[in-house]
Length: 614
Image (tube, rainbow, N blue to C red; front, side, top):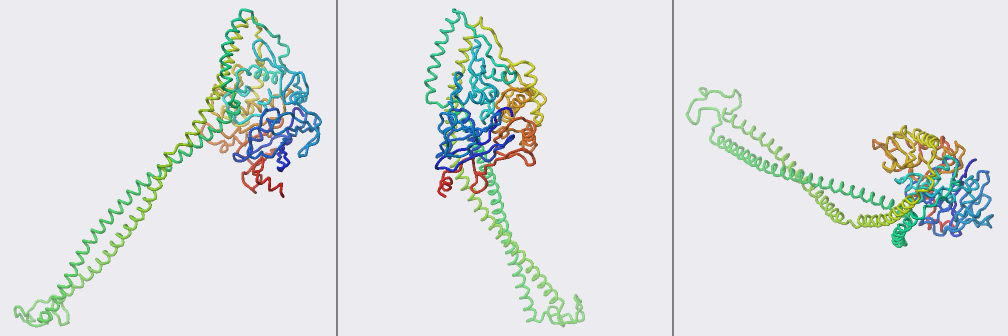
């Protein structure tokens, strides 16, 4: 085995249950919702490789020690222990996964010292074959001793770093870029800068440079005073990333609020129209019912009149057969209107037929009036129902109007983001002044040998091919045009540098850089830490057509290539688990749900106490 391999990360405390996570030999995925401790695992690994501080975690109270299990290139298992508060390391030449801890086999300093082997950095570098290497740090060919912390950002990639516009080989500050570029040349070409001869500028140029540097130093002193109570740049970038996520979420919530508000306004307008229409129909039906009532009264009058005619006729004998009571015409001489045998006149038959017809019309009219009244009652009910819903909509709009005027949370996020951006700007000013200082040194160094720290073209071509191979395996758009540009130390695809692309593409290209570096070192027998930890390489990536990578297969291709095509040990932290059916993945899932699988990396304090008491 070439390089180191992580076996487990364990948190130990007397009052808390031991919390441990085990890593697979090749590909391990750690997935789950936000705030389950995924990124905290990455922070803890970095802390156990020499980072100064461990980011605070609400569930870490009560834990005292952290154990990181490793397997050396020789196959020897070791365990590195460190207090959760930092400080020195304790080395056990065995696999230790719980306390209480025995006396260590060695005690190692957290600070790299080229003159002492009694540090974690020197111990690790000795085992991966990079101990004693030196890196060029400026134009005067001054060099610094290689520390394991110089390698950390290449094998432990945090979420903010993987999405950053800064090229993957650099950590950000301008003053460290020369040594970081030299480190990449060391990994690709296999040679360090121990043989460079340091150069000294002439006296006159040194005098001018000294004067300029005094001005720069005065400005730097002022900035350093302002930075006394300011967090480190990495922590500020993490804060800015968190604030940006909060801001994006607040904006998304505001957009949803506006959509709901607009929907209610539209509904209110629609209800007003519906109520107006219902009221209009009630009026029309009421008027129609009134007219039908008049007609019914007319029918009633007609029937009464016909009934009176019938009664009068019977009394006066108008309807008996015989001589006409009006003109005296004999019965036989009268024209026959209706040929029947009943004892009735044709006039009586006609009158009674009219009564029957009018009665039928009256019955039909009563049915119509009943139907009109039913329709009017229905429309009145609809108007009332619509009025009640309209009242609820108006009340909701009133409440939303009050909430809409409350921008306190969003304003606080913006104020905090502005504060963090200003603090980061102070570091940017420091970088600019440091860059100016280097520029001043370059002006005074005409005698200095321009010893290049650029990688050889052959190494660049081979490394570019490895990056291109990874992107092709992942199905990445424009993968065929990918190359590594040594003048900018950045990846270029389709004539566009990584720094100028969206954060999702930047994350994918950063992942391609680090995995390609692992494969390149294994293929070309270069010394390298041997493991790679990446936080959130996929979560922000979208295809050019806007589709989620989960929908187009890039996630499956990505994980399949890591499991089958990338050498060494890879640990990926993501929100979503890898697709099913890929062999060789050691999957760890946090559920964020009590009593459902593993809720998170560290158990909540209340659950821990219950477990300890039991």
